[in-house]
Length: 619
Image 1: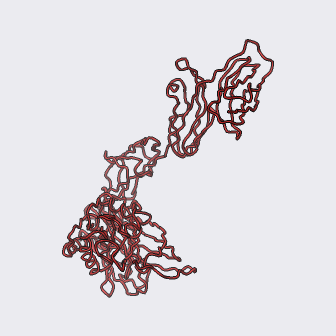
Image 2: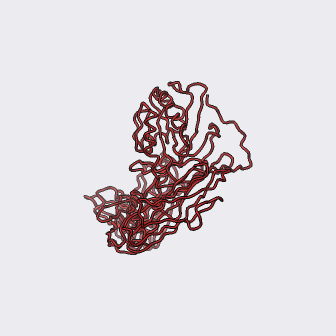
Image 3: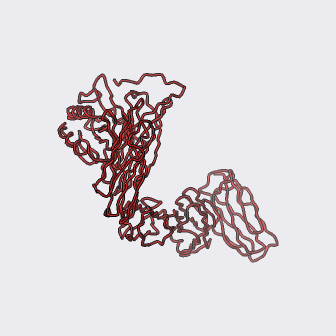
């Protein structure tokens, strides 16, 4: 049986902070397993032993449990089916044991420590383009996780997905919970924040963005085994840039991320290298070095105020200088901080000679579309362009998605829809701004009536929050000898209208669908040719009735006449007539065969007269 966390949660909020590793690469192994998988029982210990043999600041693991093979009752899968299934689908995992090393390298059965080591060696020297610093604050049983994400280097796809997993380091059962004999499970994913879809951030060098989420410490978890593991990933290529775990010493993060200088003249770029977070009790000084990549004798670095930090949090100044002979190019300055125990971390700043990073995007990702030099995109793109070069950007408008569309408004530089830009060392982004428009869809029922009526204001797109005015006419039509009259609008969608007025207004905050209902006109017969001298609504006869009765009324002048039936609660039941009539005496037959027994009211409305009477249907 699972060990259950047994502790008394103090009512007084207790705060603690854990700091997660940032800077150079923390490699990640994601593995897929199950307590009902026989081969998993043989392979999991190989992976666990490999992870335990490595520095936790260099590699981490997280396990996702599956509901196969049969009987599919793995309790760690059943605890959180959605996040486990989502991550399996992300990679298309269809057999276990299986894993992914840094997202793109498949780890297949049988697991081998030598294979793991080869992949480890391959990726351990790779500097991550993204750094993360994660802290969590705990009050009682609630935990708030805060992730700072910093972009250090150029990303061909600047849309970075940040995933946060709540991990239980070790789960022990007194007897096997599944069919493969395992009782101990390591690095088990318990929860993804906010879910397994992660959080998408658009990142360019120098960007620092912060995301925060809360979760509750479940009493079934072993509290001292719970930690957060964050990682940044390209969701398209599936490559993992880096992961983040609790630091054992110090962290590094630069400010700013890049500097663009002109080619053909001397240049200089100041930077700050920060040690923003340290482990509890850490007090060793950090010594910094800097290296230019690719090496160029015309680019030099210096630490004008010294290269040692002894107090934290603090930062150190770095200056990069270049001569006029340095060719156009993108140069990375690799900064390494090492303490007296030999622990080190690395970060990168960028020094662009005759180049600049330019972000082209839209305020509505995946909907607003734009082109750069003829290639279409729907998400932000980062380009490394030569200063002085010309590039063509174009906004595509409108982009129609059926129930809504987005319409181009302006570029962030106020340029034309299609424009040729000249890359400078100062302008770093061009954003196409689109506005949202929602459709107010209108149809007429029955369909045969539709071609004979006109809807003004329908089947159009309106700006979000705009007021739409709709009107329908005529209110009476004849289709193949059958007279129809407008009965009501039937609306769907927030802010829609349902009622008997031919015209209405709606505030557009979403897609609205309106159906104009026409019904067969109940026979209205004029009685004789005499013209009455006053308006009058007579009592129906017979009354009580079952199920047919006659209603009479008098009109001393021509005009629009609306005759409606309401139930005892005042709810409209039927429109008997809605249209123009000349002066005279009239009668109309009401067939209430579809009504329930009870009291009803009928009401006449003209421009000059309103009256209401009641009637009783007894079946």
